[in-house]
Amino acid sequence: MSLPEGTVHALREMVGNRGVSALVAAAVEEHLRNRATASYLDEYEREHGAFSNSEKRTATDIWSSAERREAGWRAAG
Image 1 (cartoon, one colour):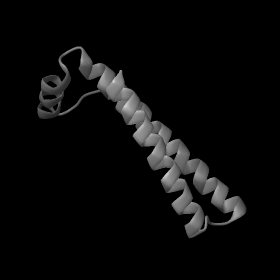
Image 2 (cartoon, one colour):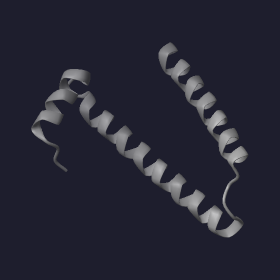
Image 3 (cartoon, one colour):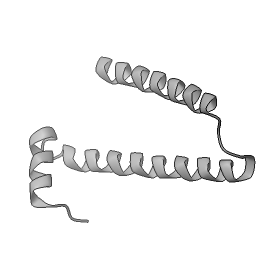
């Protein structure tokens, strides 16, 4: 795997030499989870119909709350 030199330099400045691999791994894992989730939701909607606006708002609220809690855990850790 390769990244543009400027990108690697910026990452090293942000997290240090040893942190680059961990940061890239975490980003790739998050990307793969997001794609898997999107695929699952697409499949669900094909089988059961589209989510209503109310369902989408509820899911957005739940997701936002979970992200806020996670951010709090990360800040405390």
